[in-house]
Amino acid sequence: MNTAPQTGLVLPELAGRAPEPSTSRAAEGCAIFIYIYIYFFFFPPATSFFFYFLAADPAVISPQDPTLLIGSSLTATCTVSADFHLRAEDLYWTLNGRRLPAASYAALGPTTLSVALARLNGSKQQSGDNLVCHSRDGGILAGSCLYVGLPPEKPVNISCWSKNMKDLTCKWAPGTEGETFLHTNYTLKYKLRWYGRDNTCQEYHTAGPYSCHIPKDLALFTPYEIWVEASNRLGVAVSDVVMLDILDVVTTDPPADVHVSRVGDLEDQLSVRWSSPPALKDFLFQAKYQIQYRVEDSSEWKVVDDVGNQTSCRLAGLRPGTVYFVQVRCNPFGIYGSKKAGIWSDWSNPTAASTPRSERAAGGCDPKGGEQNTTLRRELKQFFGWVKKHAYGCSNLSIKLYDQWRVWLQKSHKTRNQVLPGDKL
Amino acid sequence: MAAADTPSARTLRRHDLCSRGIRLARKMRSDVADLLDIYVERQGLDASVSVAAVEGVPAAAAEHWSEQTGTQRLLDNLAAYRAFRALLAQMLEEQREQLGDADAALGRALAAVLLQVSAFAYHLEELLELESRGPPGDDGDGPPAPPRLSLFEQKLRGLGVLRELAQWAVRSVRDLRQLARPSPGPSSAPGMAEGQ
Image (cartoon, rainbow over the protein chains, first blue to last red):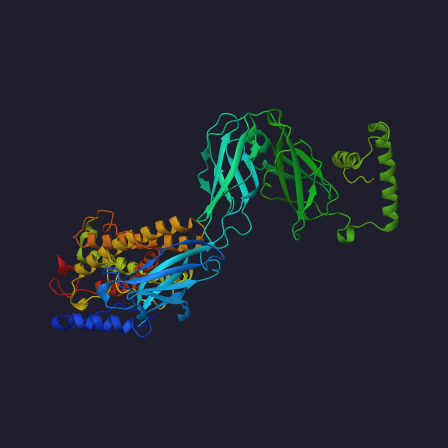
């Protein structure tokens, strides 16, 4: 015995956009009738169209799936199969679901109706406009997709980069209007300049919609010719050829092991250290680095541009007791004597560190004005004495020298505190 | 291991598989409904267009649904989802041929539903295994390739496939709910064991 009724057509908790499957327990003889009834229940012919899929083609549209230029004209014909007993006057046309005016029709025979379309606009969807021949009751007899558009335009602005000299990625910009209406296919091709044969890039969209990645088998020391072919149903357009040597377009991973640490108790400084990109360690190259840093509650980065090829740097003039985020990037250039400027890597992941809190700002410990003046005078006197000893002429005077002195001062404080606890300046 | 073979363990396992299957089918139905919206829009079709029958697309409508055995339900479902797997793969390929990767949203949605259909077919196979019935062999290629259709016919066939799949997802929920019910005895009609 069945445990529950099974005949409901709509499942309440599942009722939604898709119609329910019919589940009938009708008697054997009524089964087909009920099936048909259920079908028509969901697809009433008054509100929808039928396409006769299983039968022989009820009609044929010519031309089938044509490609046309914007502004051109087309005359299409719909010829009904004799089996369907339909005449030309029983037919009508729609384009993308809109009925075309009868004035554009002509009966070319008892079972053939034509329609004339003038000054066609670009296709409404890239899958093609739907030109459909209907019978009087709205049924679909045949359909044809129209592809109306423009030939592709030359791709422009090709730029390429090689990560650690192992691969090559190129980007380009499409023409302005070539793919507005028709799907356009892009193929990046490359070959060694003097004796290579054409190769086709296989991995598209790796760095955005108009990009391709060549993962391996690239030669060094010989320039490549690179170009992009754009093709659609209306033609092909080829970009200008770009010539490049892999060595000239090398970029690398962001510097590894970025460490940010305090400089003793100096409250306005942080020290940054990093390692050069390991992937390039076996290659002869130079490197430039850039640092950028920002305070925790700001999105504005300050860039330190003059780091040169050192792998450490001190940030000065910072706010005491503040968390800073620091990033470093690398530009490998001059690889095997390349004269090109090199390409900056991505920034390293942010590394955070805080500057020490200012002791003077710490509430009651702040000395009184007179005492502060005396301390400052004493420090300045001490600084000038130190400069006389460590700087040779004024040409070397810079904030770095001042920073060095501050470090020296801190160290001497510590030493004195250890030797003479409680002693004051 | 011994516990896995006891009737109560099997019942629990069947119930668990059915519950998970119901969740899968519901999610699939919701995703197919979204996919239908995208599909109709991208193909420029009228949402009210009806496709009477599409060759190779299994119909969800069943004449004696309530009288089907549990095994028969599973076998019908499995045959249907294997067919949908092949049909959706074909649609995806045709879509890529026509538009490349340009219409990423439609391609992604189609691929996601194809994955769900594959997962659901696998789930049904597990249920059949539990029944000691084992799934029937899968030739992997699905139904024989239909004759080459015009581009407009391809559009309509795709619509028919997605609509029927949406209906199947609803039917599958009901089928699995039937299967999840405790079976009064090995000989009763709608239970799980009667099909053996």
